[in-house]
Length: 191
Image (tube, rainbow, N blue to C red; front, side):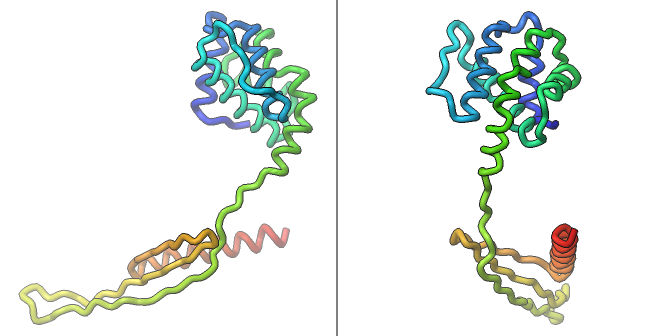
């Protein structure tokens, strides 16, 4: 399981016994986070005396933790190992507040939500290209060479246009990358 740096940093800060967030409040934030992820929360929870910014930071870090754990189908013991080894948690009460039975019962719902969540990137609808030539002038004091540039315009399904202008060498590299991508796509689909 791999989390972004800010989530790990927040979880490391919460691991300490002198943390501004009590064990009881951590359990409450973890429970609310799980309920929110599976669609059973009713608005923002009341975190009482806890600093609102701290509570929101912990909530965000736990969201990331639970989503990543759901993506990898991790069990509570995997979350416990992550908190101990990557975040330096030693307090069993704090660990059990996050790697709780509620997580285990929520895991199928989290995985179901993740499977129905898709990111739709726009597709290419049209592509046009041309070569522009700039003629050099050998009559100048410092003669210039003729140059060519490739101009590529890619139209996307969301209505955006992407324009690329490059030299012959850059176009060669671009074409090689596209061939590599196509070969990898064929390899993945054929396996």
